[in-house]
Amino acid sequence: MLVASALLTGVLTACASPVEQAQEAVEGATDAVTSAVSGSRLDTVISRGTLICGVEGSIPGFSFVGSDGSYSGLDVDVCKAVAAAVLGDADAVEYRNLDSTERFTALRGGEVDMLSRNTTWTLSRDATGGNAMEFAPTTFFDAQGMMVRADSGITSLEDFAGRSICVETGTTTELNLTSRMNELGVTYTDVKFQEGTEAVEAYLSERCEGFTSDKSQLFAR
Image (cartoon, rainbow, N blue to C red; front, side, top):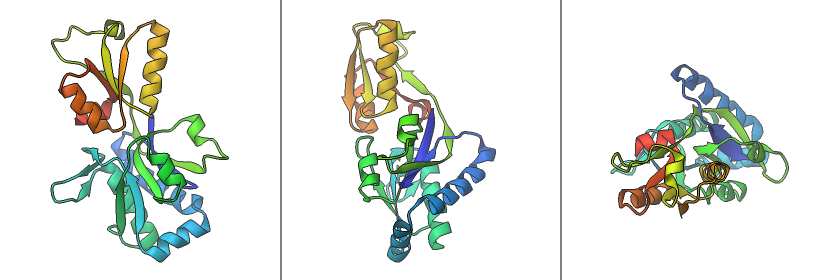
């Protein structure tokens, strides 16, 4: 699974884990942003003096809002790197929290200049034409996982027969879950949420017996 960032015409920065690749990925994302954005968008950002960056906003280590309102994490650092390269000021960033159903609409509609959040790089999303988006270099490699309670007795996907799984809608996570369960012939109930935090809260309150997401998100929660 590749997670990415995006800019209108849109550069999407994808997921990469090795620390030694971090600097290269950030530099690559900056170059991609500069080259992929149309002149009018780049001119708008420079004229405005602020980069509007779409992030998830609730995943520790990637993009998280502290008690003082400040943002931190890898995705936030990518936004800062682009702002530093384009505007000469790493702090010239306005962050917009976007859930999985809002992110592409916000990017295509010009509400944000770029996305730097967990977004899997897929062929359909990378296709040219109507998408008006382009993925920047991968910033984090990830994989999908499943979280269950230690005393649940669940040790395989087949054990979810007749049970429920919390999942964030509008994501490749949801599509992968549906596809795999169909392959296995497992009948289950998917409890869908627009935001990852809602899915986590539902799982913790035992509204579902499993929670599936990127492994990095499962660890972060």
